[in-house]
Length: 252
Ligand code: NAD
Image (cartoon, rainbow, N blue to C red; front, side):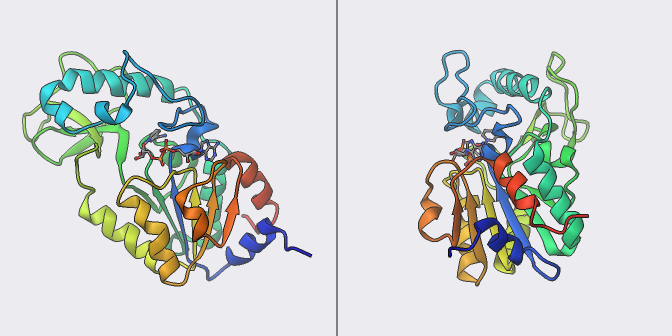
């Protein structure tokens, strides 16, 4: 008889395990946050069909107001969204395994993992509820939406504020990449939820874990490039996956 895949995955998520989770836009789709490439409806905004052009670093210098309008549009949607049972399950697993045994790496900028209570969290692409100076790295919370006009200045560099988000054409912070790659390399389990795993370098993390001996599980209603190297593929949405897995875990 084939083993229940949830039971099998849960058998790896026990005391002493080192779990590294990578999440993407799909985990937030059932909270009502649109993904870029499907699930929840791709945003089409002011006739821009390609969000990667709106989220590109070049636009910071060509039209910062347009960048803020785009982020304000997304923040207006996201401020009405709440963490779903999958975000909450990941925070519960962290409490079960302890800070050292669990690292959550997200490509999302929506802040929902923070709201769910995750603490050992690497927001590789930043957080849209923070801003920083255009000419420095000092960052600050930015809870109001939409942003006040004119665009406020950074207290450190005096330049206008920009979203504290890693845009297309920008590099990840070295510190974040080092922490994320080290968590994947030393993991006994890598769990990938709701990402097409196409945006480099976050897309490298599952293979890095697998090459270092981790058990690799993937959750996505659509096939992804990871299916061929994964030990387990759950072809389903994040919330039903979380509901099924939680029955097998010894959660606090
Ligand atoms: P993506 O939009 O490229 O892909 C989303 C993936 O989620 C797809 O593989 C899709 O099949 C899957 N998916 C859709 N609904 C799902 C569900 N209910 N449960 C599980 N999976 C589901 O997103 P990506 O791979 O994260 O990469 C795109 C980039 O866009 C990332 O850098 C990310 O930062 C950014 N982004 C972030 C957000 C956010 O913060 N919530 C939203 C859109 C895009």
